[in-house]
Amino acid sequence: MRIADLRQRLQALGALPVHQDRVLRHWVQAKPMEASRRKIEHFLPQAVREDLPALTATLDGLVRLQSEHPAEDGAARLLVALNDGQTVESVLLPRDGLCVSTQVGCAVGCRFCMTGRDGLLRQVGSAEIVAQVALARRLRPVKKVVFMGMGEPAHNLDNVLEAIELLGTLGNIGHKNLVFSTVGDERAFERLPLGRVKPALALSLHTTRADLRAELLPRAPRIAPAELMDRAEAYARATGYPLQVQWTLIEGVNDSDAEMDALVAMFKGRYAMLNMIPYNAVPDLPYQRPAWEKAAELARRLHRQGVLTKLRHSAGQDVDGGCGQLRARQAATGAE
Ligand code: SF4
Image (tube, rainbow, N blue to C red):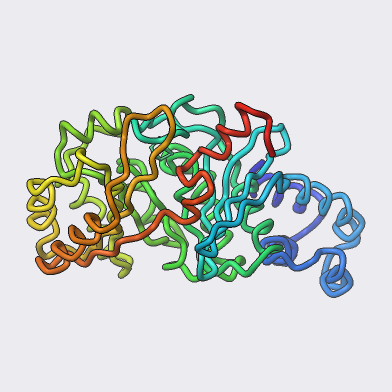
């Protein structure tokens, strides 16, 4: 379901945009609709007031918390059921962040990712994306939303941009605290600058080598890494939020001296920072996690050479930390 569908439903009942906003704001900010109904009812047309219980049930039914898996670092992985029985993962991040999923499965097929293994199963509607935020807000405050869960946001652009607009206008989330993540897609570079809400941009680069990137991300658009950086950085400069380059560090794959030197050269003069995240090994996949100390040394080295580098743990890594692992385990075993 899309937010446009919700607006249409309200409009058909006589709700003006201001009325629609009032209802949607209550939903996305996770104010208990029931408790605050009296407050908002006052301002709504009669037909909308009468529809509120049914609408509340519709909104509450969009997603359901299937299971919650707290991690030691303050993160928690949530397995979220959609109303057709499909599941996606959201991750409560430390410091009031939330990572949401934008697709069930993913067509990019990154070799190191569990989500990519089965291809794309279906898109997640904009209302379902926002519902992940509303659901998380019932558990803890959410002040930042990153679109880095299951799926490639650029492959579900209409829904993702609609969700971003709602979160950035009625959802009480600063625009720079909305982070659109992509493997690099022309459609995203074209559409993002046109949005009413312009999110920060994260580019999943992972390597400076075009050949290795084509191997690791087999169905990502074949845009050369340097050109990707140009396109993404142009958007970052236009928004005033530095480009966040994502680098999943995989032992023996993209941790070589040559890669580090190429990164330093690629970052020279860029309005960008590097998030280096040591890979979480996934059973059945041939990739390994580098030792933390080695990753820390690489990060220090890059930093010394002018690349603003943050070494991060993948949040919640002690709980089936790779993207898509919870869902895969649940599908395989029926476990909650
Ligand atoms: Fe898709 Fe992201 Fe997994 Fe790649 S890493 S297959 S883009 S979900």
